Image (cartoon, rainbow, N blue to C red; front, side, top):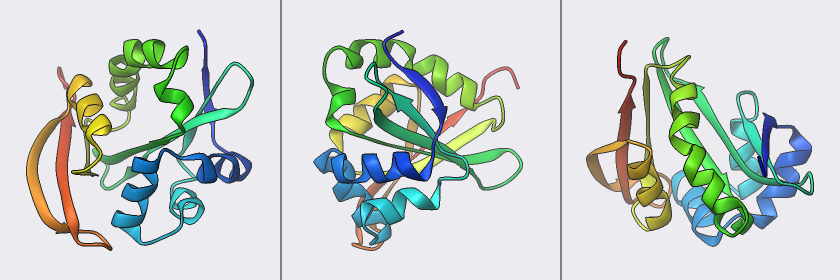
Length: 154
């Protein structure tokens, strides 16, 4: 595999935060009002990092527990994840990665900035469905799309 996944550290957050995709930076701020590093540190306890061939982090993701069976899934990436050689392999393994997240949480959910079209297409590819549009969501009161994915064969 061209990349590996491991537990995220504060050093990973410090590396990734200034390198996030423009759309991810906009989404972090729109939702939380926080700078990238502060927003990503909120989820550091459960976060994982995708590490590229050069051992540098290229994305960070996690699932924040909401209830015993429900987790809020999130992800933010640097431009490297959306470019060769990573993008093809990442897309190929995305559904299986989401299935693995269901090991702990049968219901995955969250909301995505309606401007973040790449994330929206990726969420659809992974089997998430959109259940609601919130016109005034988060710190900036922007449109966000609420999404869910339910584990099959529960």
